[in-house]
Amino acid sequence: MAAGLDGVDEQLDALITAADIDGLIRLIDARCASANWEGLLQLRDRARWAVSTGRQLWPAATLAEYRLALLAPAEWAAQVLDEDTGKFSIGPLTEVIAQTHTWQSLASLLPTGPRAAFVAHERVIRGEVIDSSELPDVLEMPFALQPWEPPYPLAVYESDTATFEAPELPASSSELALQFDRSAAPSYVEIIDDDDVALAVRQLVEAWTAESNGKAEVVCVEGSAIDAVAALGISHGHITAITPAHALQWLTWAGASGGAFGRRRGTALGRFGAWWLVAALGGISNDWPTNPDVLGALVSELQWFWWDAAEPVLGWQLQLAVELPAEGLAWAISARDAT
Image (cartoon, rainbow, N blue to C red; front, side):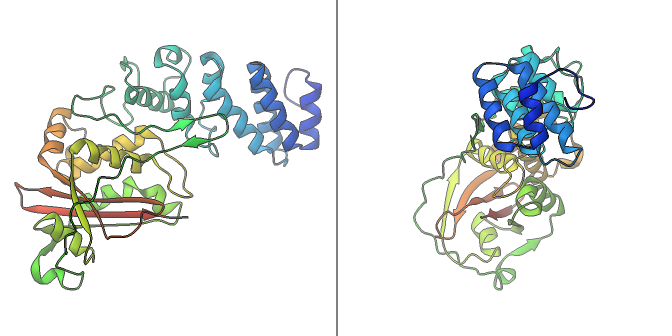
């Protein structure tokens, strides 16, 4: 029996002692199939303990806690939602658990704290009404979808895999010859330093750039969306007007994603990143938390575009242009990550 852990489980003890990853994964499958959640939690606990003794059993511990969060009843799933779990999981366990459990079923089981708040935000995105009176306001956002928000792209978690579908690309408009290349742009449009928007974009796709192979660039100009795209050095391509709802979906998807090799952050953080970027575009990010109605009006006031450089779509990309007609300003965003 593993020292310091209660309960006799001879099959599990033998696999832990032998550091038999394949055997542990087969046992995880068997305990899920028989709904032996107590046994699965014990497997997770002992595999985690074994890691501290030098046995490399973290894949088994990670898979067990992922399956518990996704598949087990709330009273078992809630037990794997602590600050040390999910570091190597397919997705954040706050998002995994929210796919298959209501906030109502979890609220009394989760310690009040940041992780509980993130679960609540994930359930809000899925349409649940949340009583947030005892939750910490970690994102300083309402625990309710706003009337102006679209349905957000959601991760789909399964026993061994997950899919993170991007929003649908808009159909390209007729080709537009962008008149300015990067070197010529200053002769025709004034490039503006906008540190707030640049920071918001960097934070939105930080997992792509800091944890993977991605790059991000943003430019602000006095002029049109085409002027802004040209200031990125794009000489020709397509630019297509999209709705504010479509733009929010793209921003949220990008902020939730880990890109090619980064760790997925979850839809709650993606939604926060989208709101923060909109606030920065309107010059109100320093007044956070902002009034949701004011932010909704700003989302609609901004004019949104998707652009491309007549190149195939490869990997992860976010290529938006935005105009604020009242100020005569436009921004172009280019963020990409690839395997």
